[in-house]
Amino acid sequence: MVLLVAGVGWVGVRLCGELRTAVVPVLLALLGTALLGPLYRRMVAAGVQRSLAAGLTCVAVVAVVGGALYIVVAALIDTGDQIIASLRQAAQSVARHFGAAGTGLDDVAANSRKLLEKFGGTAASNVISGVSVVGEGIAMAVLALLLVFFFLRDSHRAVEVLRAVAPGGTADTAEAVARRAFTAVEGFMRGTTLIALIDAVCITVGLLVLRVPGAVGLGALVFVFAYIPYLGAFVSGAVAVLVALADRGFVIALWALGVVLAVQVLEGHVLQPVIQSRTVQMHPAVVMLAITAGASVAGILGMLLSVPLTAAAFGVAQELRSRHEVSAPPDS
Image (tube, rainbow, N blue to C red; front, top):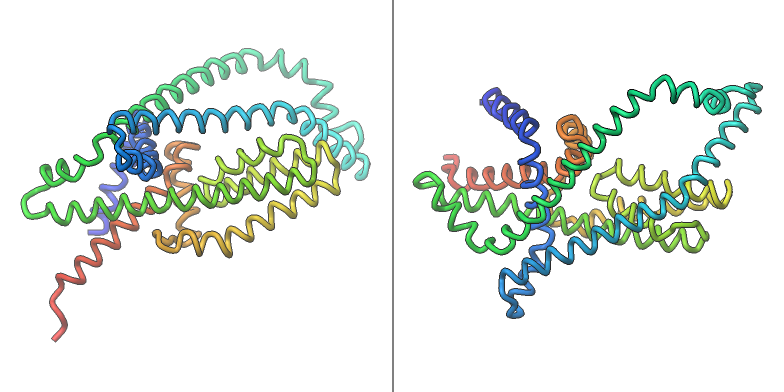
């Protein structure tokens, strides 16, 4: 039985990898629906027509996501040269300290023209490939947004369709499992979003107090990367510390590191237990394995999708186990 489940799971993962252009937008749309469902339902309860409420919700998503991306990109562009210059100075200092002046980044800078001429063709090919990937990403994002609209507008029909296609006698179980899985994803998305918002606000305030340039953009980066547990916090925190090091020096960078670590401690010991206490709880090892598997299948998108999908799987397993315990005859 275990081998059968493992085989089916492996085939499913391979199919998702081969059909990622169609599968990823559907999964992103389901996550978006889980996150935006409360806003949509409030609009409908207030008397807004379903199609209009779904459309307004999607417009709000585009405005928020687009604004956050613009702030992040603008902040990173403004401070990118400072980060590179700071890293170069740090490397030169280390080289001089160990008696290796004239090596490392200096050699790379001196030979950059030769390297560019040698690998120019490869770079051009990579640019073309990158443009293709960007185009594919934009197409999947647009498709996901359209699917969010339809999922929100027709969400009241989902249970009817599920019960209609379920094999005879399994409609109640299928509905219960689907509700439990969606509830787990919905709870994960709500909790993660709230935690990400608190983290972003706290780090932004700390960076503003330290007068680190691009504090708002760095806070937006923290918010976006918070959807990748553990790894996202490390990456966004490292960027914030590098920006502080580039513009404000070593001491302020240490203070920025202290702010990032304090926020992470707050998240791990207070926010996670309190906010996500009613959602599916997963061991950190399971989360890391899910992230690794997602990255191997679909890269960054796989990392984003792996944890909520794992939460849904845990929810389904808990629902099936509870139903089995209820239906099992008592021991005599």
